Length: 405
Image (cartoon, rainbow, N blue to C red; front, side, top):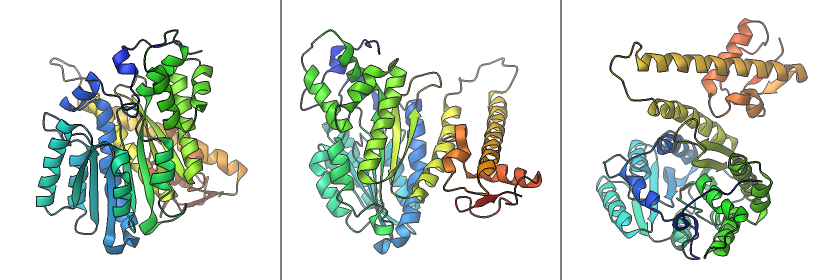
């Protein structure tokens, strides 16, 4: 059984009104400077939103795509570094010649909203379509969904605590859109922050002998976020916090995916390699093309994150840190290609032909979330040169059929 984790009461227990989002000193300090975990998140957004808009906007009236940021924050860090709203508005400007990316940002903290509203005002002056909405996500969700009718929608749900309830996510956000499998103007995707710190803190209440004020309200808020109390057994049956967080994050993704008939991809996000996840980013997409785009974005973002967590330069070093980093990246990529080759050969022992899209996860194996299409292509080309497949590795990777020689 998981041992209780010591946390100060004000960080752990929430009132009924605040149960959807934790408000702590850490929350208020977050926007002073960007943490490594935010680097990965922002890099994924930058690399995903523009391809998403370009791809799904092809079938949308007027090329219009809608983006929703449900927990936007002030838009920029206090040191001037762009937060997710500033980055997305730049993306909207980048695709403006081919797509109209309409942006809606929701923020409930008055001080953060004032800064966000100023950022949005500046974006409008640049000719972009954007709106800042003050209050809770639930208050404005219906309005944004009404504005998004007839257009593809990408929602970014990034709370500091629990965020939207399971019902609001599955029934209101996804349920208001066209049935599963729809593409073009009906495409709906959600990128969600499933907060691992909240899971650890709230889960600790289940094994704590104390009965502090607000305990039951907090547990019920977790039930609402997860779509039931199933997470309680998962937490209690886990050997430690690490296992509990992983089981609950994956269980949540599976339940949402089943409810809205979508694929999902869950990736842990850490501030350092040896740290437990600060949160999991979960993409819900009703089309496999979204998963391929997300995989490419993750791979690039992971490389940028690894660069970000490099130790600062030290005088007198015998080796150049940048050169060492590049060498390590090459070795890492070589390992991915070898892993993919091994997995393809294993699949070819069972099947005469292996469709890359169908067997994506099996082909990637342990490289899933790290490698990208270029590494699949490299692996197939090497196998072709070794006369182990008749597939040359040329052409569109997802639609490729790898066959025995």
